Image (cartoon, rainbow, N blue to C red; front, side, top):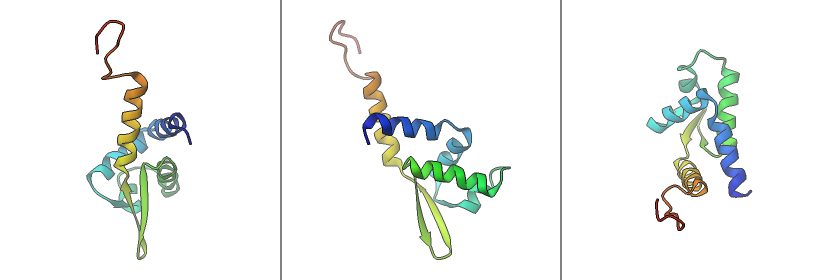
Amino acid sequence: MSMEQSITRTLQALSDPTRRAIIRMLNERDMTAGEIAAHFAISAPSVSHHLNVLKTADLVTAERQGQRIVYRLNATVLQEMLSSLLDLLRIGVERKEDGHA
């Protein structure tokens, strides 16, 4: 997958406010789907859908621990995507034509 496709997939996953809220929660600590669902007034299948979108974008990993599945933020992918996005927008890169950043 190209870097552009990866950025597109990540941005699409982050386009939903529920998924962004899940990312913020997982940034605080690892959680089970039930713990995540307790923060939302949506169905369990909807929470599963959001988690699957985040997993497909590699923003979240899932690890089985006995009967539970624990979700964890994959911060490396977020950092790589932000770095690539900054490069794409040439933020922080000095422009040769006028000498400004």
